[in-house]
Length: 282
Image (tube, rainbow, N blue to C red; front, side):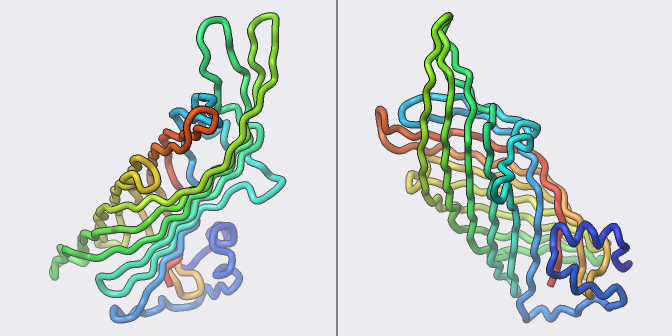
């Protein structure tokens, strides 16, 4: 295992600041006792495409946003985004938490749905927070005593808290007439979910993970699902702890609605795209 060069330290400063300030490039790897708790902490960026439909106070809009639209309209007047994943593990038991926060200002990824000659020029101020919390339990392992590689299957269950705050402003145009309109709404809900996760530890210490879950069940949303595939590779040692590179692909879909008529809020959207970041193993 090599020690972190200056470029990797810069990455660590961005993604895992606290550990980077305490960096000791001469440290040996920390030895982990399997009977003790271990912790991994990942900070990452999700580069998503968004597609679907939303209804705010009874008015329907189409959602079609690409990464350029999303990153070009991050709201820098406040914290624009934060994404992290943490997992504590001891033996077959794991406890995890995932946070995704993004705030957009003036996004053009929304368009009004109207028929005939009526059209809508739309922009949106939009904040979304998802906080995932849950547990995992290892139900199968495929370790080979002759090869330093292994596979394991976890069952996962937990909850996913959603918060959305939307203010959609637009001009309804029926040439030559123009009418300004605005719709805003804020909602919170929690979706239970269940799923499975396959972990593959490679001989060189790298790890591939495939996870799928589904939930909602009418408790929060009508239905939600998620698929996540990631690859972690060992980059170097930072203050005696292993620092990994982290890449993958994530898709998250939810179909939620509440109210009716002029109070209807509906969000039926798929978010999908690559993820990239770094992981520290404590």
